[in-house]
Image 1 (spheres, rainbow, N blue to C red):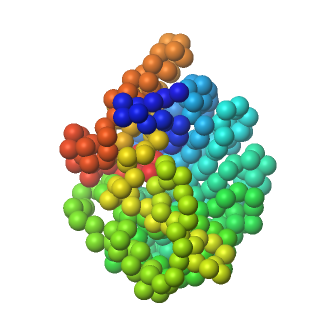
Image 2: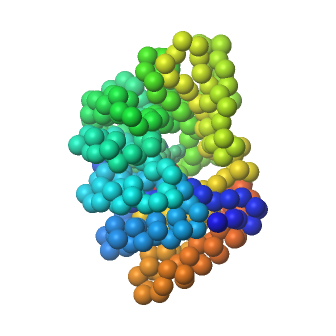
Image 3: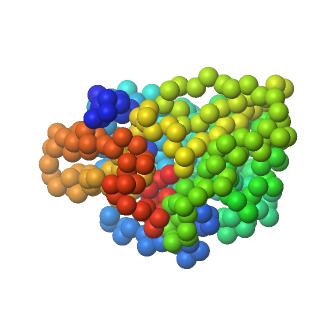
Amino acid sequence: MLIDNHNRVINYVRLAVTDRCNLRCNYCMPEEGITFAKRDHLMSIDEMKRLADILVNKGVDKIRITGGEPFVRKDLMKLLEYLSGLEGLREISITTNATLIGPHIDRLEELGIHSINVSMDAIRPETFARITRRDHFKTVRENLMRLIDSKMEVRVNFLVLEGQNLDDIYPMMDFQRQYPVRVRFMEEMPFNGGSRDFINLKWNHKKILEHIKSRYPEFEKLPAPLTSTSVNYKIEGHKGSFGIIPSFSRTFCGSCNRLRVTATGDVITCLYGKPVTNLRTLLRSGLEDAYVEEAIVQAVGSRVRDGFEAQEQFGPIFGSSMTSIGG
Ligand code: SAM
Ligand code: SF4
């Protein structure tokens, strides 16, 4: 089992399979993109399979596939086929922009993929196009509806962006009233791959909730596991539910059970920190699994307590983009 130096069990890994993406969401990447990793610096599917074996052996029972956009990686399904047969792995989930998932939905369902998080920060085509700088709304909406009809659990991640999509919040609430989907409103974080000033967040979790309350005053808080990053609510008569993720306020760090591995094999033990070791180089070095395992144990054994301590220790993280980190 992986236990960190603050006695937290680490059983959840977010594995980025690429840093490339077919969208250019303006809160994540500059229009021209970022300096993407060299192709041979991205882990191969075989390296990721080996890494998954090592992690599951150490007690990891949940892996979330993320990116960049996971489905721009043509060989992604090979990894998912492998993971779905891995004993001990209780939950496989994917975070995606849902532009390219269409041809794979049936197979994902057959493989028993547990949940799909669709990042969709707008429910109106014009807002969507403005934020993502691409015209894929129709495809995303169609794929989202197919996912909702599948056996997989579907969540919509909606980043609240001041001056950009506030008018889409109530229509998104309306969406969860009509369909059995969990919509999670998220605070923006300063990972945009650029140098946009970001010190104070106006639309924090309290303000988002107040805004929703002024339209829907009655809701009940749903029970959630201690490790949940979202606080979830249900409105009577609504088919879905909604939640808020205080990603920038970081109220959930105390129970953090996660580790991030980037597409190039960097290990990030706190979203607000910096990579602490690189597993790709170890996986390619010819060393046995035990050495890779030891590097992971060491990384987990020297984690910061929370995102604030990480920011103090590692300095500003404003230049990084979520497409490299994996969200
Ligand atoms: N491309 C996939 C997607 O968009 O779902 C997966 C990768 S994306 C980097 C993962 C998550 O990071 C998305 O839900 C996105 O909203 C979130 N994200 C990206 N930049 C962010 C930022 N500056 N603040 C908060 N969340 C961000
Ligand atoms: Fe791509 Fe996801 Fe970043 Fe949008 S948030 S640019 S879809 S990686």
